[in-house]
Image 1 (cartoon, helix red, strand yellow):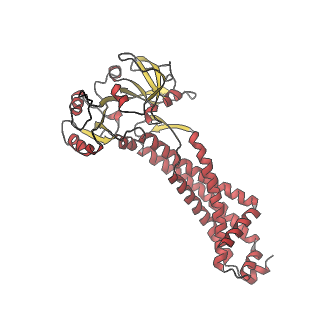
Image 2: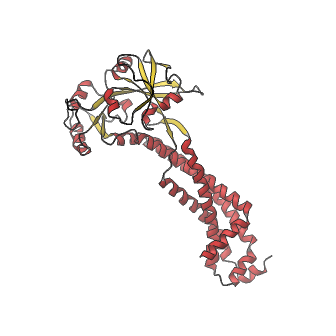
Image 3: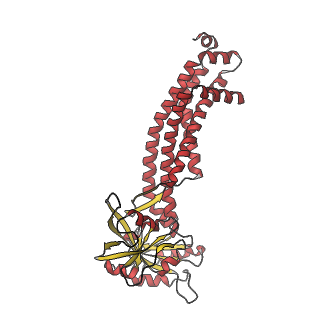
Length: 388
């Protein structure tokens, strides 16, 4: 086997042009394949990072998202009294009542409008999200038309930068601070005083309640208690699971579209590998006959050509993966089809993506090299040695 590997490697070096073209063809396909998976993974990681392990979120049953949900004040006050919610020493429950509304705002550069989430929050909202960090400016003053902007929305949308003014709810709102939340989806939102935003939007109800539980083990009983009470008509989810669910439709769409494109591209790469290997067989007919005459069997010749094709594919796969890793420095934004809000996120690579990419490359190399390898193995020694 080491002899066959050495033989295959030297033949790749002997045909630099055709081997290089095939390597880069496979590398391009693997690059596209990795990019799609990284895009999907980045979206999922951003939304999952939005939730905290100890937090639970309550929305109206069958609402699916906060934007569609309504929770009346009396219902919110009743839920806050539940024993499963963690409380401060003074008895204050660690829970926040929030609203979430979409506004239409033009993007920087393109001037194209898109939906921006505006979240009405309280001091408790910041407390239960420890990743929150104010990186520029200051917090809003309660009772004023001041807001703070997530770093990504401030960068991407007009009127959302520090010191700028954005108009919604029949009022002008001044951005007095920029915040980050560890790369989560909150960085694509505008935050302000919940009471002021409820008044501006004429919305006397909350969108959701988010709370810390006394223990993660309390979640199941808390969920059963609230969802079983007909007064609440509530749906309870772990915060991380809720935000993971928000990415499901968009992730499925990206994966389906990307895999389809990758398969189409892979057909071209497979044909290229097949042409390369058929040319190698045609140019080395006498060489194949010599190998057979020296005692190498049909199976050895088959393995030699398959190894050569797989080595080309693995080199191409490694190049494609290496190129895809640089996408980590690229940030993109798209509409989250669950909430119809603009969401900014980055490409994220993982060990699983690298493994899948190498498997994809190996499959292309095997399919592209199998038939030429079979042809080489079927040559008769006499006919092969007579070939010119």
